[in-house]
Length: 196
Image (cartoon, rainbow, N blue to C red; front, side, top):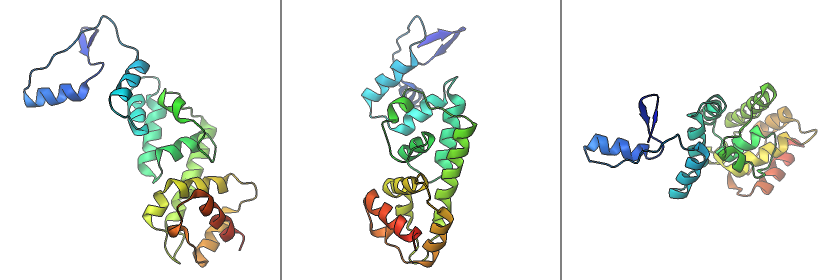
């Protein structure tokens, strides 16, 4: 804990503090002179318990300076059926994950009007797939699969790929997405359907 304008702030151990106060269990605190470095706290916490990308997103969404960017990121994640890895990849404007997680974990997620338009376009297209196939229907598990989402991003980023044609053909054609596991096989199926 450290004192910030006559009020104590918890630097680390918020869950332990909440649990102890709710259960009436005594606990110990260590007071420090100044506010600890937030990046160091995230590193310490990630070494104590395996933090996922969602934990880092919530951490940075609670901090001044990164609150708006990470708050919007969390809203996109909550409202769309995409994995954190895919959403970070979309923010980067890429189709494959390329080590963007480190900068994301360090609170360096970037956004601009152009980036947000790109993110919203990709998420809109992914949402359209939910009811696009009937022969058979795309399973929820397939739609949420990172490999499927990654294959779709590859298609979106391929020059000449006609998403509207793909949607129409997907509606009218048998597909095997629900049986596939690897992104490379899903990519082949996407381009096969688009070329019909």
